[in-house]
Length: 256
Ligand code: NAD
Image (cartoon, rainbow, N blue to C red):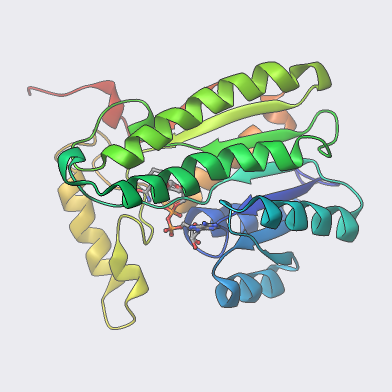
């Protein structure tokens, strides 16, 4: 028995990184999975490998959401879950952030999450789940990523309101707040075929040892296990909450 037997779940930004691991784990736990991304080649290859449906979905486009939701229901006859995982990160101080860049981040991270809730909400089965990927920076500040942090704070607001509004149908809405996770977002070396990704990961571990109590960067598979918990009946009495998964980073600072 898998934890998601009989469930149909859309995972956005699932062509790589955390979304890919969520798609793989959910399939392994018995779910039908809709792999959604703008990276069509990678997304299709993953979907074929794990026996999922691929849909092109730019999360900032309402018409794409309509098509993706319809495709999921046409293929599997129902929809039980959504993981709003797609996201982008850019580095600038607030004073140096061009408005276009700020709006691009808001459109993908925040509007994308809103449109996802809006599109799947009406067709989600009673007792369904939505998991929104916020961030450590949705809970605290981080210099150099102001637009990103603002969009991730907003996702926690959306999560709480959606949880309140969808609770009468038994639909649960929670958020994940990952710290530093070893994907292309934190470790661009994984996208460079000429780079040694493992060496880059060890370098990141050395860096994060200074700030993360557990002494290393997180792995996308660890976030996928939290997404599974929040999508399965194991979390049946939990809604409207942010779940920090950061190796203790947010716990505070040490003077030892
Ligand atoms: P990643 O860059 O490997 O994956 C992001 C995925 O989102 C990619 O597949 C990308 O193609 C997709 N995407 C980007 N824009 C999109 C759009 N408009 N529509 C659909 N898909 C789009 O990074 P990741 O770490 O796997 O990121 C997953 C989520 O986790 C993001 O929301 C990110 O903000 C969040 N997060 C990441 C970290 C980290 O350290 N890696 C930490 C906290 C939160």
